[in-house]
Length: 119
Image (cartoon, one colour):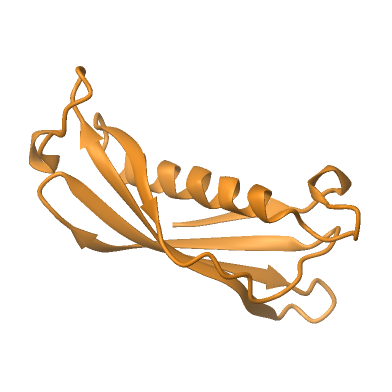
């Protein structure tokens, strides 16, 4: 699934670059949208996000593209790779700014792990 986000002044730190926490929040949000779309009726929580390494600085006015791809499915969990690209509105090109894997677990109404196939 692909989603986009515009970086606004309220997303920036005092140096004029995107706060890393905002990017992590957006990664969690867009991947949650993807997993709930892929598995309707299931309740998911984020349990892990690996390797947080920011590859490029991101400034005001940047349009970010989030590509979320399912990479593994277990009995109760599912993993996605999320690649975040920063777009150049002048040239139409984009470059990888951030990448991570995120894992969600399916829960029942009592907060216990639940098999994906039962969703």
